[in-house]
Image (cartoon, rainbow, N blue to C red; front, side, top):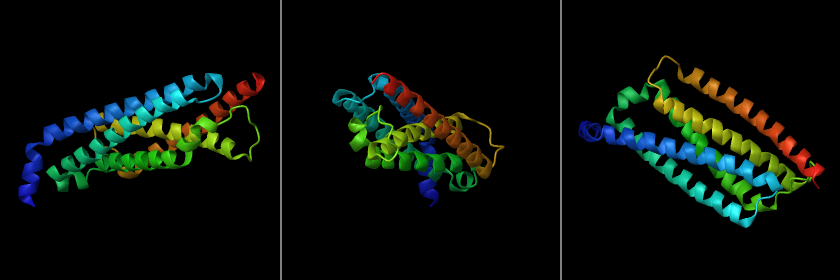
Length: 195
């Protein structure tokens, strides 16, 4: 075990550099993807070309997540005792887990129907209306999660507990989801007016 730890310690700087780079690229791609979503729905639909753009960003995000997890494990293995007792590191990796789950459920539940979303449909029981609302919510969770992971990756302090970090994260996620649903209603209102 000590030999393994020494191996990862030797390359710790490389692991940290890869980890920070993956977080920044992943976060940038997620934020840019969300910004493009808001730009693309100006005409109240997502066409095939726009959907292909999202697929490219999706691949970049998944590759970034892969390198985040691998480099995160390498950092962890460089000093298991230190990082297993680091609230900040454990909170960041928990948030990365939530990013992965959010991305997975978006891919399964939302992505196949993204091109079929009708922004002028106000029937709350319609399948694609629920998907539309979920797409906004997933986007908000993604933005908050990536910003949180990036902040924890770059933050040098360690005075906050695991519980307090996650509590703050959950509060920001809830605020983000509420704001996303307000934005969804505003977009729908404009779509109905322009119908």
